Length: 255
Ligand SMILES: Nc1ncnc2c1ncn2[C@@H]1O[C@H](COP(=O)(O)OP(=O)(O)OP(=O)(O)O)[C@@H](O)[C@H]1O
Ligand SMILES: [Mg+2]
Image 1 (cartoon, rainbow, N blue to C red):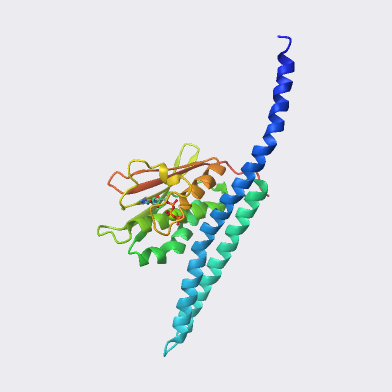
Image 2: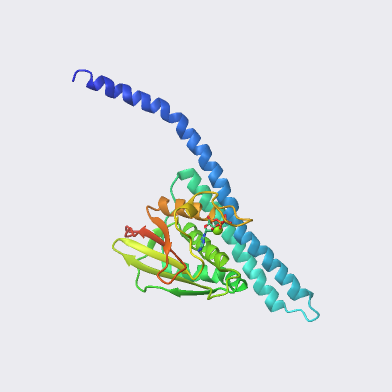
């Protein structure tokens, strides 16, 4: 009983001395993952910039150039370049503060916009994209850019998983509510994720020849930093369902 305070003090010293090193190591490890995640997330809009730049050159090089089509492609270039810089900004802020930058936004609009961004890529792979959005959802208070990155990662994965498949190739995005959680689901008609649906979330796990295996690992970090969870399970009619649950924190008075 006598030495209880003594050992408590001792314990505290021990902990604070030792914490400094793992904390530094954890930060270095985190920066490594951050680099890999920025490389992964920015490569998608960059690929879109290149594809659209090529498209606009082709429209202008025709025997009868079509400036309107070229202009539309240039506008897509601007949108994708803006998105790339937003991704870098939000990753930088996250690295500095350790927490996401939160604003209140309409999840359904963010989903519609994500479909807009991925539609062309999905169409190239013969994949249809549809949405089933619940009206009247409360705004989500979260880092919009990051949550959108997660949705885009899931859609791109689903489209890639179905590329070349002979059956129906469809992706459906849906929103809903479960108690205090806002739910976003991305379901596909692909081959499924097999008996170990959690392995795919490990960093560097990939079954693709040119994959980094970063998409789902980054996505899970983002959702967890928002106090939420993301999981995969088999769909009732086959395919895979990715389910994101993020707590809805009612926005405090913002004037
Ligand atoms: N919708 C899906 N259907 C089937 N398998 C999937 C699906 N989504 C992901 N996977 C599996 O999970 C693995 C990991 O996905 P993840 O996005 O983390 O990396 P990746 O897509 O392989 O590479 P990248 O770093 O380019 O995203 C994929 O290689 C694939 O095997
Ligand atoms: Mg991926």
